[in-house]
Length: 173
Image 1 (cartoon, rainbow, N blue to C red):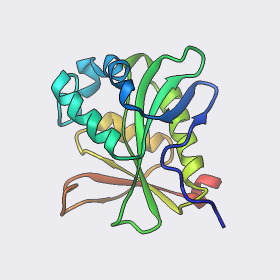
Image 2: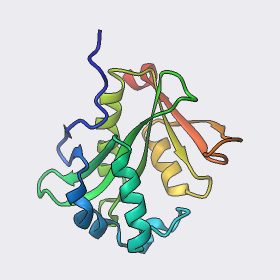
Image 3: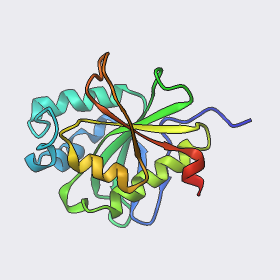
Image 4: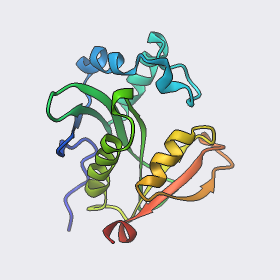
């Protein structure tokens, strides 16, 4: 029997370390998020301080948020989080991810997601990613790590989002 799933583990790789997000991380995370180009394909202008504050407080309150730092320097480079999805049994969502622009291009995001997926697949059969239809950058990033488009949500709070999924068995291959 597996131990209970830890929504806020500390995970470490050669490039990225993930640890539980804390209230005192606001200023450093906002510094990483303040570039307007990060948010061009998102529905909210999270580079604005008040909008980012709302995003940060929701992320912190989620109980599954992780702060991403660069392993070598300790620099704050972004965030991601785990979230249980009632509508997808035996599934866990990974989302709300962003990285500062110097860390774009795949190596950092790929490592961060590999760390999170490896942790998740010790407990669940599927991981889902909800991506806005206009967020082509995130769609490509999810596909790059093996996400397959499953559906477009047609009702509820997440209406219109695309659902990408990775199964534990395909991940193990």
